[in-house]
Amino acid sequence: MEIQEETIILFDQDKKYVKDYLKSRKVTNRELGKIIQKHPFGLLKDTSFFVGEEEFGISHFLSKSDVTGYDIQKVNTLLGTEALNIVAFAIVMGDDVLCYDIKSKEVILWLVQTAEGERLLVSDNLTKFLKSLD
Image 1 (spheres, rainbow, N blue to C red):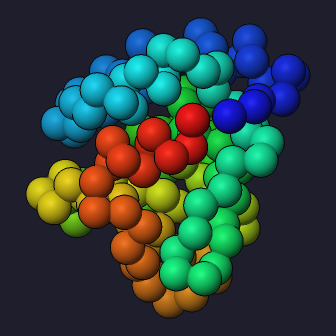
Image 2 (image 1 turned 180 degrees about the horizontal axis):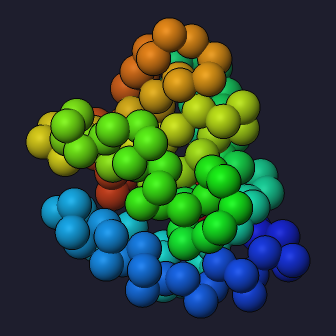
Image 3 (image 1 turned 90 degrees about the vertical axis):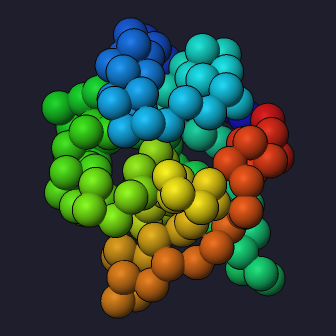
C-alpha cells in the first residue's frame, strides 16, 4: 500500500479522530486498527480489489478533513449509514464507497455514484479483505 507524499501530514494527524468514530459505531476490527496505525491516510497508489471479474481501486480511506468526501463522520452522516448498520471507511475511484456491515461483518461496495444504490459483496470478512490490501 503506497501513499502519495503530499497527503501524509494532513491525514496522519487524524488517526485518533477516525478510531474514535469507528469505536462509536462499534467497529473494533483489529486489522483496521493496525492499518490506521501503520499507514498514513491519503490517496493510495496501486491498491485495487476485485468484485467478480471487475477491478476497483481505492482512492483514499476516510479521515478527518474539511475537504468534501474525506471526513469519515460527514460522509457516513450524508449517506445515512447508521440506519443501515454499515460504516463507510474508504472511497473507491469514481466516488463509490467501501463499507463495513456491522451485523454481517461483510465488506460491501456501495455504488452510490455509478448505479442506483446497488451494493456488491466484496468480502465476507473485513480482516481478510484488509490483509489482501497490505
